[in-house]
Every structure is written in structure tokens, then in C-alpha cells.
Image (cartoon, rainbow, N blue to C red; front, side, top):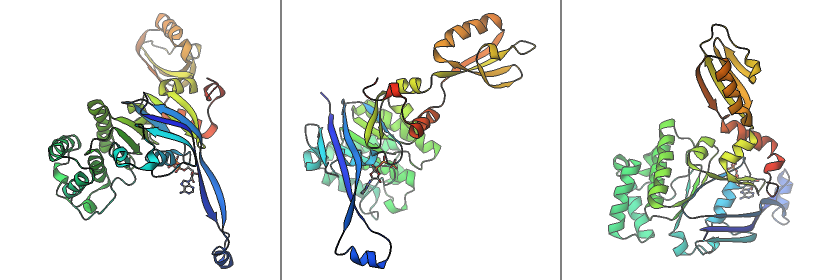
Length: 334
Ligand SMILES: Nc1ncnc2c1ncn2[C@@H]1O[C@H](COP(=O)(O)OP(=O)(O)OP(=O)(O)O)[C@@H](O)[C@H]1O
């Protein structure tokens, strides 16, 4: 039984348009014209409990709008959403207590004059967390997120990375079953990014929480998500494994060979040469030819070292964002 069922979801924003100048500004007080922006069009998917799913797409594709619809911040203009048997836009307390939305760009809402511990206590009251659960969850989160040195600090004095750790603690204090993470590694340094990725994976394993993650950093998605939903112009362009997407988009592998031979072999006989230097070559080879080429290389050449790599996922996805999906991967044509 899916935890999220989204069926032919649509969201159209209506925004006022105004031409330049004072006269137009004055006129718009009496006569407004509007423009419609179809941010989400006929979006359908389901999510099973306990999964970590990547939600990716280029700028303006509709990711944030979808997250706002799923958390009930926006009311859809068409279609239906059912999460944990409820409709998010009703914002029923029983629903809100089971979900959390954490935005990397704005990890903490509310007053920033409070200390972290005061904010956690406020959250305890708001979400009606018992004292026993509060103490247990706080101890766990303090350990997982290294919060001890931050608890007595005012939120306004925290750095972005520290705010994000506290934002996570505030959102997870009431143990939501469903987490929506919007760019959780935005602006973090390398150490904080690694900590964040580790935390998300551990939280999912330990609590079985379902996580929908948007990120422009494909390394986040690659490290955490087996399945991805790719959205483009408000429509679902791909729903499936990241591995299959990557393999279909880039039918090549990179073979890096080092040899003991005194003179370099004719590398062209084995694949397209991407790079060479003395005794070394990087060769581009079609995936299906890799085993045969390796067998031939090992027979012909004295090989000192050999590695096979996939092209970087960032490059592969960037190509999709710029050129769209190839025909065989488009939905309904797979
Ligand atoms: N409040 C709004 N009023 C009008 N149009 C909006 C509003 N919010 C978003 N849009 C438009 O809806 C479309 C989808 O925007 P959305 O923010 O959901 O995309 P996104 O995939 O999250 O983009 P990004 O990766 O840049 O954050 C865009 O064309 C955007 O300009």
C-alpha cells in the first residue's frame, strides 16, 4: 500500500501582469490582467513506505511547487493527492504530525531570538510530544547531529550549516513518518554535506521514514536514492532507477589502462582514445563491448592496472536538462 498516491495533479498559478510606467500602475488598481502559469501538469506517481526517492529536474520544473502541494501549503487546481490516507490541503493536525518539510534555503522558521533548546521545547508543545519521548528523541538527535554545543545558543547567531542541523532536529523531534527534503545540502561545505548525507541515510534506516529528496547535486541523489522521479516543465519525464537512466543516457564506459610494455600499444585498436600519456590510456568503449575488449587487452598487452568507470552523473543529467530525454526513455515509450 503506497504512502503517497498522486493522481493527475495540476497546479496553475495566476499572477497579475502589469506593463511599465505610472499610468499602468494606476490603471492596475481598477483593471487587473492575469497570466496563468501551468507549474504542474497531469503529474501521477506513488511512493512506498520506507523509500528514499530523488525528485530531480531543471530550474523551474515544478519541484518546489510539488513539495508545497504534497505538504498542503498549496491547494491543487486539479487532480488528487492522498498521503497516509489524507488530503494534504486539509492540513489536519493528525496529518501534519506525520510529515515534515525541510528546506535547505530556509531551515528554521519562527523567532530567531530563542535558543535552540527553547525552540525544541516550543516544538514539543506544538506537536504534543510527551516528556519521555522528548527526552529520548532529543538525546538521539543531539548525538546524531552533534547538537550539544548549539543547544544554549540563540538561533540568530548560528551559521547556515548549524541552522540546518537544528532545523532537522526541530522537524524530527516529533518523529514524522514522511520527510520532504528540499535542497538539504545547499550552501554547505564538504564536511557538512557528508554529515548531512550520512544522517539522511541513517535516519531512514533507523526509523523507516519515507524520504522525498530534491537536490541539484547529483552526488546527493546518487548516494541516497535508488529511484528517481524526473520532472520537466511540470510533467513527469522519468520514473525509475537512477542506474537505468544513467546507463541508457550514456551507453559508454571509460576504461583506464596502464601497461608494462616498453612501447605503447595501438590504443585505437581497443576503443576511442580520450587521453594518453606514457604507458597509460583512457578509452571510451560501448558498455556491451567492455567484456570482450578487456579480454582482448589482457591477451595482447601486459596490463599493470585497469579500471572501468561510468561517466560522471552530473554530465549525464546536465545533458537531459539541456536536450531532454532520448525517445526510448520517455514515459510510455520505455
Ligand atoms: N507563487 C508563484 N506564482 C507564480 N508562478 C510561480 C510561483 N511559484 C512558482 N511559480 C512558477 O512555477 C514554475 C515552477 O516553479 P518551482 O519553484 O516549483 O520550480 P522548481 O523546480 O522548484 O525550480 P528550482 O529548481 O529553480 O527551485 C516556474 O515557472 C515558476 O516561475
